Each structure stands twice: as structure tokens, then as C-alpha cells.
Image 1 (tube, one colour):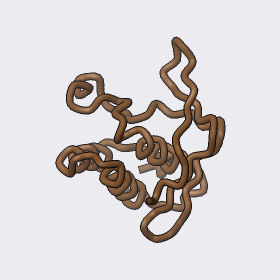
Image 2 (cartoon, one colour; image 1 turned 90 degrees about the vertical axis):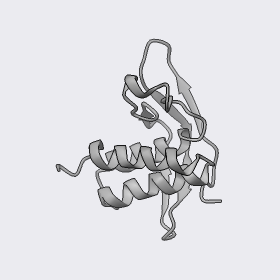
Image 3 (cartoon, helix red, strand yellow; image 1 turned 180 degrees about the vertical axis):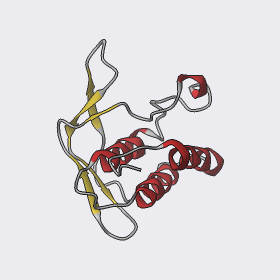
Length: 120
């Protein structure tokens, strides 16, 4: 299984973001290990409020993939391209058991609207 650890988060009431309290590890298909460090803050899946009925931002099968994807997008080392980051998100969604049509819809959303530190 590509996720090598569980996701443990802390939410502070009144804040939009969650804080990682134990490193989250994910191994990409090419073997590269992605480690989301303790203290990293995420909003989970950045789903527009209008779409929350289809995909809640804290959907069980999207939580770990969303945190990994957020981390890759904000990682200033640029170990991954945007296309690679988005593909990792899609793969991780499917590995978490998300139905393929919904995983594909979320993948398309990040391909079209996802913005990271690539300056594109």
C-alpha cells in the first residue's frame, strides 16, 4: 500500500486549516517517498463550497490524498511537476478506494484550477 502511515490531524476551532501532528508518508508509483512533516497546515481538499454536496472537503477517501497533494503544491524544492503532483493525487484517491468517476472529477478539477508554487 503506497500510504506508509496514517493521517493524524489537529483542528483548532475557528480556523480553516488542520495541522499534521504525525508525519504522513506516501510512496509514489516511481518509488519516491513524500513525507508531509509535523506542523504542516492544510485545508484538506480545496473543494468550492458549491460542490461540497458532491465531494465534502473532508471526504474520508480524499483526506490523505489531499494532504499529500497540498504538500507537494507548496513544497518549494519542486521535486515534482504540477502534472506529476496531480497524477499522484489521482492515484492516491483510487488507492484510498474512491470511485473512479469521482477520482477523475477531482483530478480534472486540480488540473484546471490547482495552483502551486510553480508560478504558472
